[in-house]
Image (cartoon, rainbow, N blue to C red):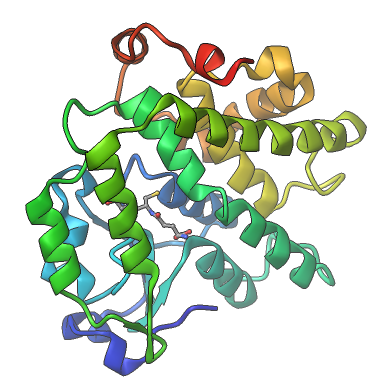
Amino acid sequence: MVQLVDSDIKTREVLDWKGVHVLHFMGSSCSQKLRVYLNLKGIAWQSHPIDLPNYENMQPWFLGINPRGLVPVLVDDGAVHIESNDIIQYLETKFPTPRLIPAGHENEVAALLKHEDNLHLDLRTLSFRFVFAPPGPPKPAAALESYLANGADTVRGEKDHEKEFQIEFWRRAAAEGFTDDRARYSALRFRGEFDGLDMKLAIGPYLLGQDLTVLDIAWLIYVHRLSLGGYPFARLHPHVHAWAEKLRAMPEFASEIGQLRHSPEQLDAVRRAQGGKTMEMVAGF
Ligand SMILES: N[C@@H](CCC(=O)N[C@@H](CS)C(=O)NCC(=O)O)C(=O)O
């Protein structure tokens, strides 16, 4: 669990918030994952939208809540929790039913979620290349300056380096864009993962067997985003494709992933703008 300590939190007003509050962004994959989880659990929560496209997460107020500058954040009766997977695992202990982490498998699920989180920057690379495709640097220098200068720089009271990794990612993106090489590398990483998931879904309806779990939520969000970017699931991973279609039709998922920032026509235009190269062409799929 990543619960912040008092010295990490500079925006003190959140300490007085009562009940379950979520700071999130409609189109953020990690926020979508948490919102689907909250829907499935039936947990009531108060919404605090954070405007990522206008760099609100890099402003002092937000960095005073999450020194990493990332969404989602959970504030539960004044206790601040960060990292989507840790938030979900925390909520699972507080709201045990319906169970979305099978009893006795908490450690295994934690490790599988950590593995999923390790692919987050690959998802971001492919999202920015094939879904969002901003014309200039995705984060302007002034926003990055504010990101660097604000917030406690500690998590759980210890010097934290995540913000440096994030800034390095955005600076590199500004300098060289999301190149074919980077996109190919990330797409191939996912291909290996989805080959494995396809085998699991060939023998059971959900990733851990008979019941829907947090793993299904986490991976569906990735699959959905990559589908928008043109990843050929139906052709390469038919069981993953069928499973994703089933989950997408559930209202708890549909309400979150239906909120596209782009219409299908715009997504086509994004792909055409990438030198006419689709993800399939760049990755050699
Ligand atoms: N490991 C983190 C990743 C969080 C993350 O990277 N969130 C993205 C949105 S999906 C974000 O806040 N990006 C900041 C930005 O785009 O400026 C988690 O699971 O919460």
